[in-house]
Length: 341
Image (cartoon, rainbow, N blue to C red; front, side):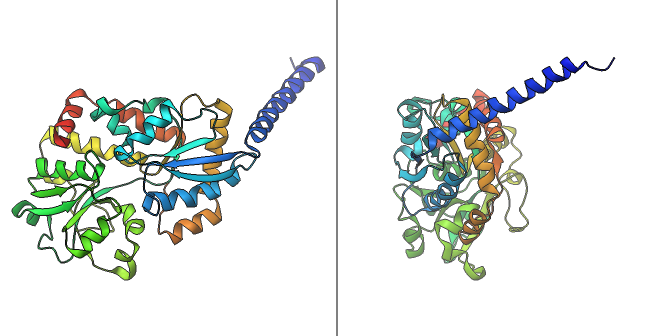
């Protein structure tokens, strides 16, 4: 039996009320952000790779947030990013005026460094990730260590930033699993590039994606200034067909589990999150703004200028990856902890 005119009227009224409620929520979000400052906290030094991308991102991102708030970048250093994440969880405003770009190791740190962590990454609202990261270990072109086999034969002085940072993690892991002889010197933050070029150390580690912002001149005009010794990836990459993966160099199941666990960090390589308990409608608006920014022609042009290849993930996809990291087996987590120590 076809619906009566009263039924049709009720359906139409319900639809109109739903549209009105949605519009009212959108207006409320715009009213909240109008005239405010949206602060992006970055756990990295000013002028570095994370910082340059963060500044380009938030400038465009704020235009897509309802109410178009002003944008500001705040550099918050300490503890290889742990200071910022602890602050975001325990101190930062929970109203949507603060967003954060954490270090690559932020989620994994919760599993392997529990004594220093005062946050639960599952409770952050993940907004999205600009690009995944693939970790690599490299030496300068003048180093006698030009391959991973060379690194197994000779002691090679390498630079890292701080204890527990992903740079140290991946090189320690290589020493344990692959039998390399990297001698890791800590304390190299903004001086790492200069130390490598001057021969103070022979190399370091970095995500492949970060080279273009860490030291753009290393990548210009097909310069062959680096020896990429190894990458932590499921398979070799077309851009570096002769560079082995760490996985292909071991058959030990426990070691492979550790490497696969480390790979999951790449899912949050350029991620954005809010502190916990931000109102749901504001999180939804920020996620929509992130998606719009990833398609923004001016933002894409800025990323090309920075030589960043956008391969974004949604907030839901990042949150799923975070759950996978935090669901790691206790055995794997304990093995990683021993490596770092």
